[in-house]
Image (tube, rainbow, N blue to C red; front, side):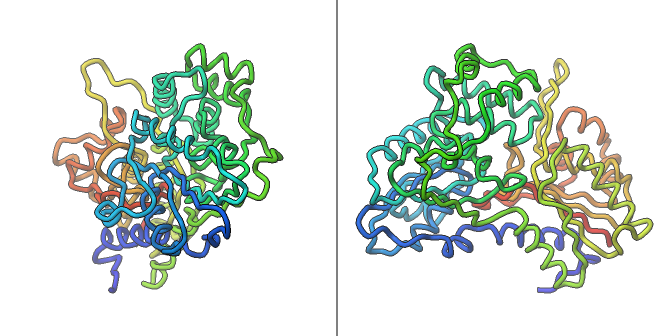
Length: 438
């Protein structure tokens, strides 16, 4: 297939996104990291995340048919691959809510805790961890109610806190995250296969690190709550103040001999997209896979870079595509009285900020989408921006700034028929952004 960025910029950008997703699909990346079955004990598979269903399906297909295999993995509603849903394998896959936990996720986490108990040193635990596991694997610390966990989670999501900050708090209010799952599995050997969705690829941050020791402290969690003005129930504050909610730390003997393998990362996906662009004669530049900050502000910065390339050929020559990843944030401000809450996620808010800052710059086309296929809680992965985006919106009487003010980017791009809808991709290496300067 020949991709022509001049004739079909939208198709070109979508192909880059598809290449990034393909690079991170569990069936394509799992085999090199699987350990051999234990000679004496059993193999138990535990896990959580948006890629959990696909990871379970990959392990089940690759594991020897004559080797015992069982376990439980929890994933987001609608994120079980159709083939595995139609013909379930040896690993039980259940679905729960994301980004705010629900009762199904709590029950799944409780079942995982029960499965982890009573293992021997002869047993092998394969932990399949991917982004989204923080919400999907939700079990309150002793003394907290599930409603407490839900309320803190909602407040964190709306606060503008970075993912490592949110997960620091989540770990310390959990009975299973922050290394506690691996501690429960002792003395069994634990091998973690992780798909990274976080800047820096720190396994302790991915899904709040249920199988790795945690270097953060209760004091760190309290500081984050204070920084963002988040009030927590009295039982949560008491547990943090007293240190009762402290997590297992590096050097804990229960982690001895454990292995962690990153089987897919954001950088690898960006490099796959860049390679595809270069094969079709377009220079590709990967800015970073660790970009954070307010989505709209990150959009403005990307727009400034694209304008410099389009107008002056600096710092890159045209034609080129500029790629970036990471995890931006949206600090949600309350809607005005009588105004319904806006719809949208990080990708579309990035794009709306970018479109406004581009001012219809000729030759610049942009796609931003979440690699799990879901931007926030909507049905789209992201959207696209073209040089005529603002003009088409104005013709419909739509003011881009008004939509941005009320965090309603989804509605803006839906009205223009510019949403990118993929459905669940069964993986998750976080934000994908591509700016084509033709």
